[in-house]
Length: 311
Image (cartoon, rainbow, N blue to C red):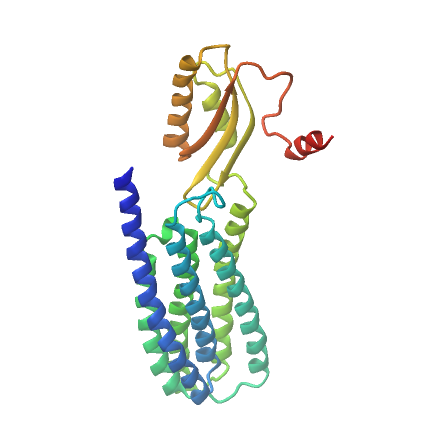
């Protein structure tokens, strides 16, 4: 157990170092890109600079969340700080939505009256931005597949990778054709990409914060598996939720025959084995009892329980 805790701590340290490096690179480049966007009169570059600025915020929040998540649970935070990453993902995705809407608004005005764009600045700064964004995205990618916090930050950065690539392509075409309307068009495409990815992260963050059942779990199949364990007669008051994207928890009342505690231990062990290996639920609270005391619901109504207690 101590070895596992040490391994998790080492991974967290590596992640925070990569996030800190990405943060420094991105913050420095934001200043360069804002200046270039103003000089070149390019909405695409200013759009990317705004998105990069939110990346600075996103990287800072992600760094803080990863660092805080390593802190142990205590009397005031009995689940620890694992939910901080979900809150950061919620903030990141919300800012992405707001940025996309702002991009659409500004692009519309530029479509009506396309300003002259300095294609040389657009191409040069866009190419440099592409290299920096691709590098920072690569630094953050490790672990983002299974961490909503890191994935929201990674999507921030990947949005910049594609947007800067689009800005470079637009700059090259403008240089040869003088089609200045391509600059706001690229911005709209960037905004649409940002909005699409932001919605996925936002939806998943809310799903977890509402303590909804993890989407990958088939509850009917799980209940059937648990009822097939020898000694299990019934199940009620079942709850399954996520603490963060990787940590799942379950609580349930398990009805058995009137047996000794020592006889109930193998039942509990078999239930935990199924939950851990088939459903990746490794934090299960199982209350064994021999009598339901009347009909009980599989998924209990907490509001009824509160009302009963108050009366």
